[in-house]
Amino acid sequence: MGTIGDLGSTFKWEPPFPDMSSVFKRYTKKSMTEAVSLINAPRRTAIFDVISAWTAVKSANSPEDILSPSSQTSQRLFDARREINLEVERCSHTAPQFSSDGKVALLRIRSAAQVHPVVATRWAGHLKSSALEIVMVANEGYLPGLVNFSCRIARCAYARAGKTNSSAAPPVDIIELLKHYADRDQPAEGQLPFRERIGDNFARGHKQASGGIVTAEHFEEFCNLMEIGVKKEGSSTRSPRKGKAVQKNTLDGYFKAKPKT
Image 1 (cartoon, rainbow, N blue to C red):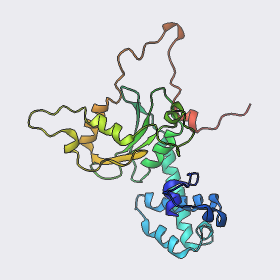
Image 2 (image 1 turned 120 degrees about the horizontal axis):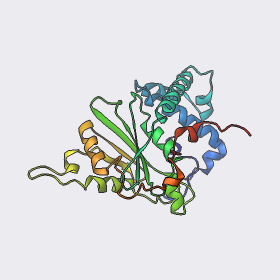
Image 3 (image 1 turned 90 degrees about the horizontal axis):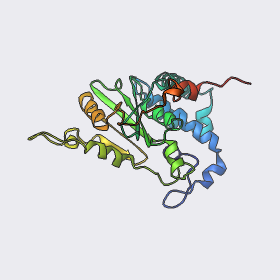
Image 4 (image 1 turned 90 degrees about the vertical axis):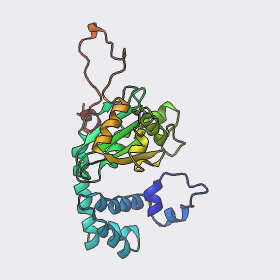
């Protein structure tokens, strides 16, 4: 369950990763991924309900046991997932802002639930731009006085690199990109560089899924270093004959069902 939860069911199981073929012969990929989804839900809630997930895992003999709606322990998992799905939907309706180089799309949310990684993954699969590389979701409501942010590689970055899916070698190293922006800092005399001031909870994880936990003040400083919301000079020239441009990258276009014709 842990391996599937971390690497997904479409991963190419080649050394040094474990051979999961026998597992998938015994249990379907659908049941495994569904069970992982349920197990992950309680810890994402505002009360960080890890114990419910742990209780369900200990009492189960197979993924099917976790998926059984008649199980008392599993019922809490279903409730938690419904709660998280609603919160993800609410937070996903946030307009992104872009860095001046167009490589970063930032969405700022406020939620007591740990939904920032899920929202980042959701937007990364839909948002498209010629320069976009990563989607960053910053949650200003998860921990008091702190900003938790999660970053995912945009699917369009894989497409530009000629890669068909996220199991291929990543076209972007998120950690290095975050460090690149942080190193733009020009500290005053006697002041520590930005990366030394923000501590160790910055650019953690791995190159495909990274993020951090920083103070609200430091995150604002980081946004300034990325030049979020700052348009690059000469990048917004439009022909007046075409009239006023209408933004197409809206959530209505991504997540609302299209009318039948």
